[in-house]
Image (tube, rainbow, N blue to C red; front, side, top):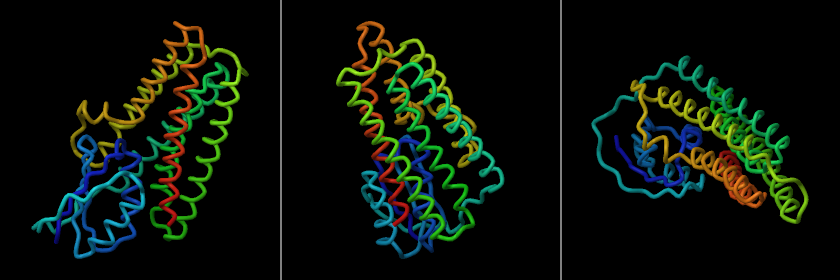
Length: 265
């Protein structure tokens, strides 16, 4: 048995963790996966199939690097309560789906592309958690087909969002309602924090969460970005801060869409 360690720089939330788990689930000989989101590290306990593992992780384009392998005496996989894990994943999926609906509706009502873009980031996470649930027990082809459809859906929505940002940069649309931007983003931030706490419980008996795990997460940075954009909209009476944040988040969503589609390969 070997223990191989990887650094995965873009593994900054539990959605990426779920994607890696799904990708590696196709490989036989893996007995255990240990994730450290705060350090962006992954430890794989496996037999002699190193090149296959490297290739699978690399396909996700999460800026991975192979650190090294050592012999391990740990031959026992961690036993999980699958019913509890599925229940918690469903809860997180529902949280993300709820905030997707809330943000996209209030985003259009308040003319905030930052909120609309953040809603798609929530949708992206919901799609990944849905994949984790619906692909369990199904065929590899089923999982790949769901991943392909999910990725294309996310990509299409993000591209449409880009076109809307361009249209608004050209002078169309009204100045966003800053109070709605800030309020909804604060709620989304709390929702993301709750999701992270729940997901940590699926992999650890420790119910507490390190601050470093929370504040290195991509989606928390996005929420804070929308809040700052709302403040700048108020200060400048301009929609430009909101459009800049929207552009950045749409780019992140598009990158995530391509990562999901990599699961279909």
